[in-house]
Image 1 (cartoon, rainbow over the protein chains, first blue to last red):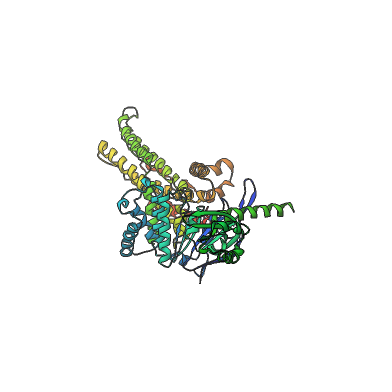
Image 2 (image 1 turned 90 degrees about the horizontal axis):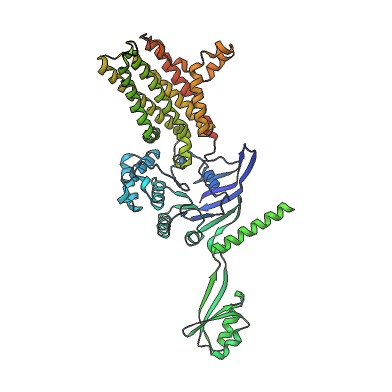
Length: 315
Length: 246
């Protein structure tokens, strides 16, 4: 079952002074499966936050339809099953983490006996026990993010939507948040988050969607989108005199102890290369594929989309 | 209901942390107390001066507190806490009404502080307090609540600084609405039904002259304030229901 399902979702903002219209989102069609971590990527101003606001019913779509957990966008009952962390929130500085979580629990209509236990559990899980009675005005960015995630998990939601949860965090903070997201997945939750930190997205996500200037330019599983770009075949016992014979099929050669790594010119020639190695008396030890990074993929895709749009405009 | 109370409590807690307001409150009570020292200069009318000062300063405090309603929702939107609250299973009506109740409670609380402080100062000097002081302060609190509702609505329509200026202008015009038809013609009588007509809650001149207010008049003033606040909040909710949360 799809946890998030949107079709043709669009949003146009109208500004009156000076008069102009901004197409923040154009006909977004997207589906996010249950128990997946979905990374929503895009440059600044691509429409990620707008999409999140539309999903949560904070903004009204100009066109299109959408469903969250099988109910239309903005449905009140569904909100009880969704957790949300906004981008760069500044929680009430005068409240302690514990009091803030109590406040959020009241907004979720949780009974006192339930939320007092749940808040204690989450403070422990988020490693905030020592700071539970400290005012949030004294918290670091990482601590605030953890409080934010704790409030998003108060109602034990089926879907957690996080807007830029990794931005502005140091490496340790990022690892903590990543671990929490992976824990959520292990608990059977679906996590939908937007991010600029592509390396982390690549590590964590099952699926990604790439948005550029309001349009979804690609969506799919990370493993399918990021294709292997090159292959290095590690060989041993190949006589040095035969190295030259390999040159037609390879680009470069690297030595590692008693092994020699040949980077193939074309990945399709892997079988031919194996046969050649065997024929020359060598033995293939390992075939190592080098995958394109998400960052490379993302940059190429955005660049390609921008060029395409320029061409469309000029036509 | 618990969510409404939680939002009102949180708003009250946050708005009441304005240190400047407490300096003003203390200053007001000190001014009222100081009026008693002007017995000679006021030709023996120091008690009346204290009474008038207490009502005037209560009005200023009530108006200033109501003014904070203009900044409450924009602040929550800017800090993204509004987005967080509105993604919880509660209606936007609860958010608006909760905010209104929180600031209204603060208005009543602050006016009550000035009222009690002034009553103590008057009692210490004269061993008695005119009960009209409490009636006057109750009406001022009702007026502040009405202004709070208008402030909440304006904050959804205008930028916060502009909304604050408009609210102040409405406060000034609202006290002069009974004069406008006389000065500018009958057409302005209609304006009196649309804009907040604060003349309905302002009986400080009568009360200051020792004239007690009939119970019906007092109840009418409270009723006007409540009805007008509900109507204005209705508009605010209608505006906010359709609005994108930036």
